[in-house]
Every structure is written in C-alpha cells, then in structure tokens.
Length: 87
View (cartoon, helix red, strand yellow):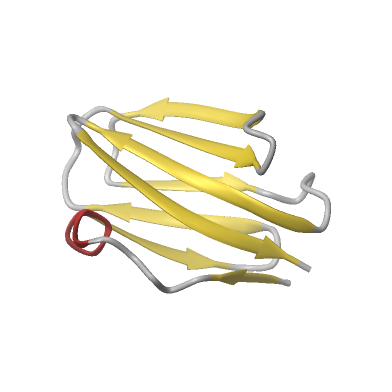
C-alpha cells in the first residue's frame, strides 16, 4: 500500500493533483506544458524519469521496494516534491 504525506507546497496545490492505487500514481496537471516526473530514493538515485506534455500521466510504482521515496515534478520554473511511503 502507498501513503502520500499531504504536506504540499502552494505550487503543488495549484498545479497538480495526485491520486493513487497500490501500484500506480495518477497525476493530473493544470495544463499541457512540458513536464518531467522523477521517482527518487532517499539516497538521491533516480529510479524512473518521464518527460511529457499532457494533462494526465500515470507512473508505475509496482517495481519499487518497500520504503520511502520522493516524487519530483518539474514544470517550467516550478518544482513540486512529494514524499511517499510504500508499505
């Protein structure tokens, strides 16, 4: 099961939403601008990276082991960071 910590910056609250299932994160954005999403472990290693320019995107997390990881969203000059726990 995946839990997201709900402490989010104003950038995150205004520019994207995250919904989840046990194996997938579903991201919804305010517009179709160019974006990059990274899943990073606590050692700073990028586990996956996707670039796209759509309003919605799914991120498969089924291959992640249990533990804490970070979802980083880059859009224009903004960066959103969400800490996640996979149990």
